[in-house]
Length: 240
Image (tube, rainbow, N blue to C red; front, side, top):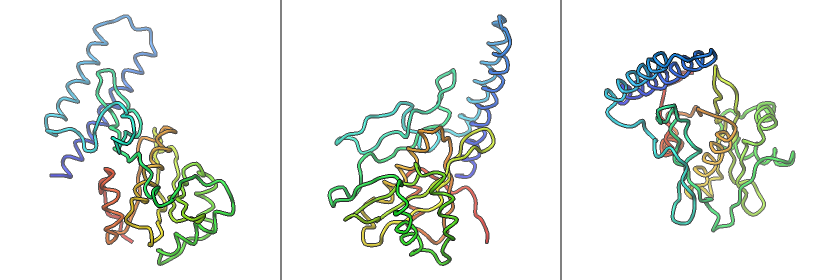
């Protein structure tokens, strides 16, 4: 049932994109034919309403088209305003992201990568949990090219958590990829990982990201629970 709903959501998004492309191609011409514009609008409504009838509910993770304001009384906000088509339907519903900085009461602070000296601490923290450590070239590829999407949690002057991402064009849109995430075992359970992922999504969303993907081990229940809490869903299983 879940897979059926996910497929309907994908079909809905594909229908919306097709409608936009058709409308844009017609807009490039000099249109004074109201009948043609009404036909495009009707086609879009039929396609979207059909998917909605079968789906029977809003797409998962949809909260509000508009961003909400953070603050003491509101621990979550939108990742940014969702794109809206000409009929007011959200094309990419925003994810609810924590606005508070986890661990702040214990002295944890957050920053993005900006010093070469931080690389050694990042490598050491991530390598702790890997059965097969990455090459230093892999770290440099991600961190140097997308430093603005490498977020670091700092405790007592040392790196206690890090997320490493990249953002590239995929087909006709920008897709983010979470390559690495690690939190020092002493500080786990305080929401630092959730905060790092939220910061990464927010920074990538700010540069036009429309989709974020990642891979994790099926046995890593902690990571699976964290990502599902933020609205990610399991799309497919990759075999070694």
